[in-house]
Image (cartoon, rainbow, N blue to C red; front, side, top):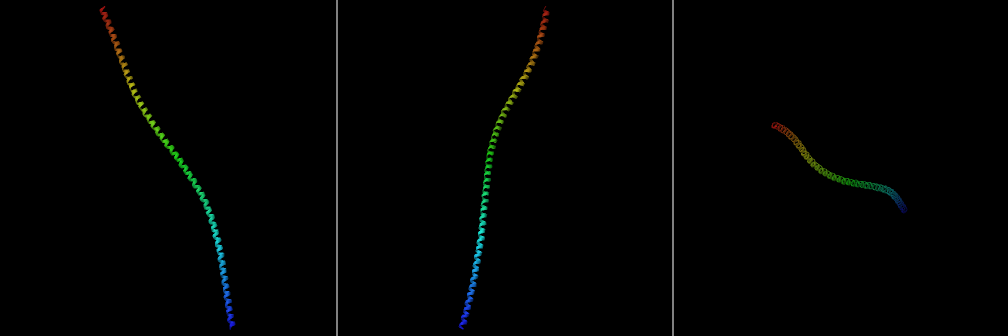
Length: 166
């Protein structure tokens, strides 16, 4: 019986050994699978990291390009602002010049208007003098005519009186 018990225990030990080996093999397969999965996962993560790195580098290039464009736009806007500022200064100078010229023109116009008024006064005075001269010459002509007439009458009367006396 002892033999049978020993055999049974040996079988039991062999079965436990076989179960243990099977379990160990299964665990080794599991560890190998996990190791393979981790390698795979590590490879995937490495590839993702690589893609992320490439994407980051591309983003950095785009950012640099965008920054250059922005700086160029900013410089263009600054140039435009300076051009507008210069144009505004020129416009203000032109306005000031126009204002000065307008004041000068108005002053000259007022001066010319005064001269015109003075000339019109002189013209009317000259016209009045001309009319007075014409009237005076006409009166002188009339007086001269009357004097000549009176002289003629006087001479005639004087002549008649002389004839009467003689």
